[in-house]
Length: 104
Image 1 (cartoon, rainbow, N blue to C red):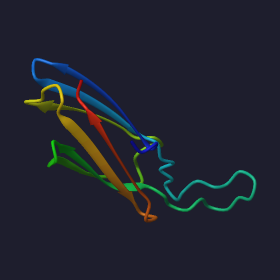
Image 2 (image 1 turned 90 degrees about the vertical axis):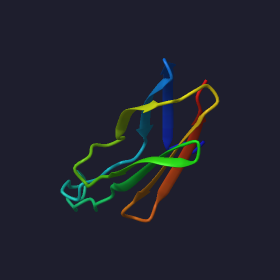
Image 3 (image 1 turned 60 degrees about the vertical axis):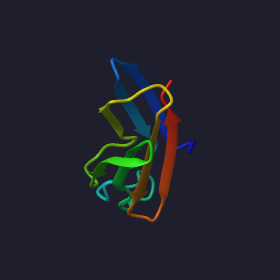
Image 4 (image 1 turned 60 degrees about the horizontal axis):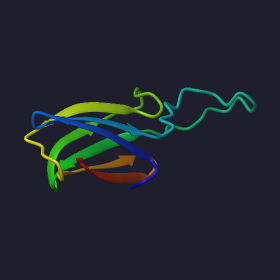
């Protein structure tokens, strides 16, 4: 799994409660460097794609207004032990990350 993503999944009554944290600076382009007073360039995740057993279930579009290390919490119906959840993200600077986990 990519070190930029952390999953927590709880399964109850065939509904997976999924919590995902993405480690990313999420700079708005408005802050200044304390030492040089230069503006820190925009650097934010713009697209997040979530999959369940290889099928897309959600796509999220963000802007620079989302805070550092964004956190997602959602539920996946019809989940069972052994199912695979995946995430892939892209940012405005050309960086990306991905991760998968298996429901246990």
